[in-house]
Length: 191
Image 1 (cartoon, rainbow, N blue to C red):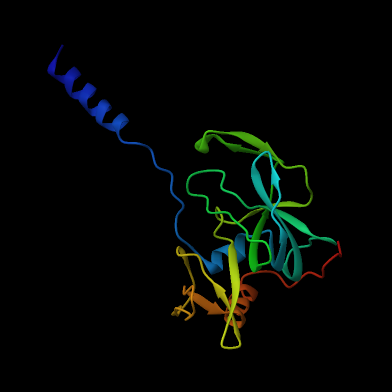
Image 2 (tube, rainbow, N blue to C red):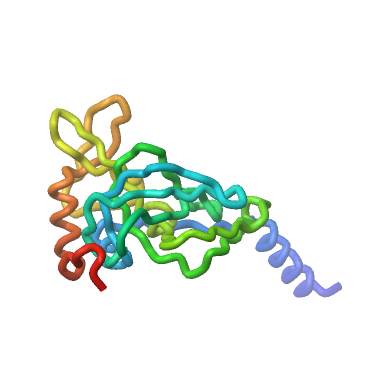
């Protein structure tokens, strides 16, 4: 063996020994609003499972972007890869940034679980690997949007007091940011 061959072999071994890590980059409320197919305030009615994958059934109370048609919508509420933080809680009211699901089949190889088929329509995924779900919380009579830890908003984002704490914006401020990043509100149920 030549010295060069040994160097190359050691270099390759060190590269292969480091596990590959996919990560979700930080994002902003502005980018979520700009890139989402739909933005709604909705109440989660239930979280049934399809092939072991949780899927939330939600009823929009306010459509801010997109044409969702009538009735409830469904969104994948369970992770499909390691950095996906998609979830939902029955009974919660949330601000959702949604993207239309490209398929009704979801791979979960990263979890060593079989794929899942979700035969419901309309079906969405939460924007930015789950960062598009922001629970609403009322503190001292004001409604706030609780931001995921890696979603930034313009200006200072205060920590809202309460038993669960967290970084949050007033709902009015969040809606103002969203309004500046999208087309005008489309009426619900109109094509």
